Image (cartoon, rainbow, N blue to C red):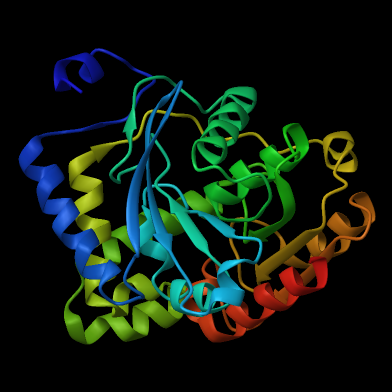
Length: 303
């Protein structure tokens, strides 16, 4: 993909330079090394660009035959963010982690896909390209909006959806953007200060050196070109019939947890909603073992 072609578009994400891109990829690889090694990397062509996919295959043949899990990461990140989860999930089921086009990662975006119908088309095409007709779809943050949008618009391939402190339930407020800005600023703090800042901000990035390096490199290397997604309306949420599991951090700044843990099951028949204590926006990182077990149990009940 010629860089000059992407540079002319105001609605397509791009890397600032090849050198910064390669430096970012090196930091991603260091984070990937903290988790299970991928069995295979794939590139899937869609109408919106090339989607890079990491596949994790179970060693147990019985587990390999089960309904797979597909992971969709948050904004400004890539599939490396799933390093605390891939080993536990892929011990029980096949796992596919998608790099979302339009975010830093190894996917290549050619057309905008932030519009709800286009986002749903992209994800459906990516699943089709992988030959996946039935999956447990898991999304975090912005990836949670993509998953919520998918289950509303194109639920045909979805056995279940799991939303980890997702977008799409409330309008993104100033408190969340302030937290993002302060967290990024805190990555430059002296090493001795970072544990206290991490606890205050509920931000594990600050105390995992590899994550900290990846976040800082991604901000320098990549320019995201999309608006914040709008939340689904209550009428749209009422259309959902696919089994849904909502996991929120008690101190989340993206949503109001107690409000949503009561609201979502009221609007979505049969939905399960839970709050994880002592965490904010990243329960699958802060409490990986607990959240992995909860997700697998939910998928088992669906199957």
